[in-house]
Length: 257
Image (cartoon, rainbow, N blue to C red):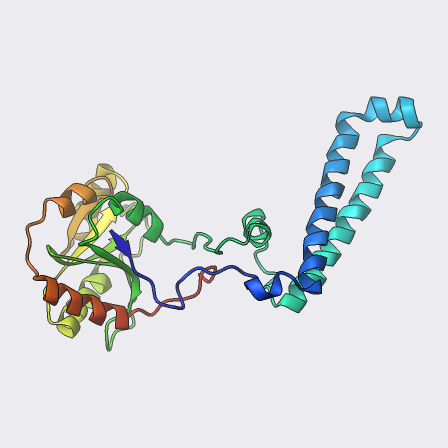
């Protein structure tokens, strides 16, 4: 399966290649190294406090205090480098720092987004299938989480992680179904909306409390569902549909919920 993303959605390194050999990046990298030394010193002082006391006659808490100063200096250097390189300081995590140091694309998980989880179930499908995310049909405020296009037709998916019997459960199904119909009108093809849950119990609850108009299934069933679907679209028709869906992507950059 092909995971198709537009320019905005495509993960990129937080530090462009041309800036990795500049002074601000060296300051940032030095800050990370100093921070690691400070953290390592803090915990080492606790685990080896007896050896420190015997050999250097220094209380381990004094070593921990100096380690905190070192770690703070590392944080200060990182902040300076990040500000100059215009790297957002919000949501700074180990993963974020790791991708910077390893020069890897930054693609953190999004809150309440299951695009990667659904794709993990479907990626073994052939490249005849295309996978899109964050598709917004015309004249519609609802953003469809995932759209799947293949020779078997066009499908939309809406993963739900909550149980339908909860008092504060807000069913996205009706809006999702309307958005799927509008998508079908925009691309000139029938669209089958599918609501996805993690287990059969949640599926049963959803049928009981919400009376859905969409297909409902578990995430474990979706691979078999798509792999067994009969051909419906010709190759040329599928390419045309994929282009139309691509143009409707209302994506946000990685790291933005």
